[in-house]
Image (cartoon, rainbow, N blue to C red; front, side):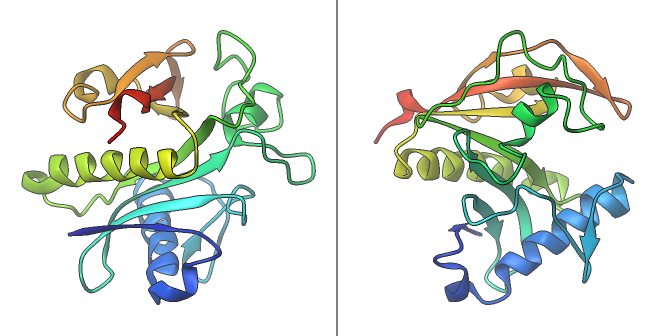
Length: 196
């Protein structure tokens, strides 16, 4: 099992890994979860998959994707869009409630958004925890390499059960909201204490 952080600058060095990650997102979010999301060529994508973003991928030696995550600067802009949580708060997204944060969405160089975090549904139960832990560890390494210390993310509201296991300080930034039958909450992940 290995982890790779992809960007538009290094994507060509990793063969089909980026496409495989988008295929794995489609398999989980569209096929398995039945979310109504954009797709093309068997891949899920949205307006936040831009050159400003990075993608953390846990995969095996053959490029089979076990887990993934997208990182987007909270300072980015593309047309009317910035990043998913802020755009939801601004009422630009009809699938996420606008009241998802207690305060105004942050825009700062030291805070990136973590979105589309997933562990593939076909990852065996006995290795899921290890895959998830490796994903979060690489997420922290990637965030720090980008000069940031925090991530804002929309997670299943079960995050307090596993935050300690992955060694990341997390705090709620908004209320628990039911989205598509699942309780979710915006959380701030603090990677500043995990510096090497």
